[in-house]
Length: 85
Image (tube, rainbow, N blue to C red):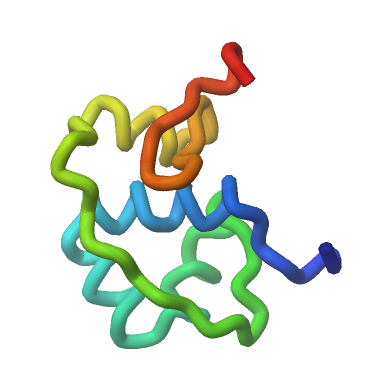
């Protein structure tokens, strides 16, 4: 993976942030490069195309906050806390 590529963990954090913050989601849909650049803790999009999935109905806001903060990740649509992986 190149230095400018976003990892699955980075994408998980972006999606969790958007599912929790409607303003960020709107900005992400309008201009993903600028939206992500305004939150450097989320990673570097650097011209990558993106598909934005619907929020999983079985993930709570608390779980998404763990993903957003980097304490957990989404793996195949399920949440994984890093302590277990």
